[in-house]
Image (cartoon, rainbow, N blue to C red; front, side, top):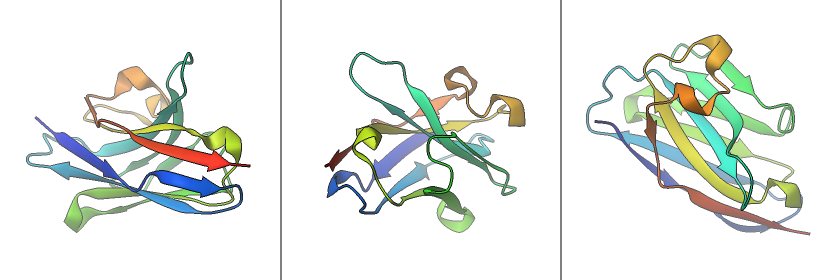
Length: 125
């Protein structure tokens, strides 16, 4: 069982930056892709970014050029650097890890096996 611990959420102003961290605790069970999703009340959880331990990355169009996902293999940690934040980026951000995620399914909620508890990001205008 993989446990994911997120940190780094908070309240910022539009244009500010924030970095989220997601650490996989314990056994990784072969989960080699970590992703970030976000969700607002009444809406479905949506893909933000993902990274495979081999460095393959994928981003949602809405965050391309502003967000950067990276990893630290030694720390079993993935990071999401969020720059030029907008009020519409406000959401609960969830970290996820998957064992059988392919390049074509990186954006899919159902492709991931493990989820964190979520961390709130609020961007004020």
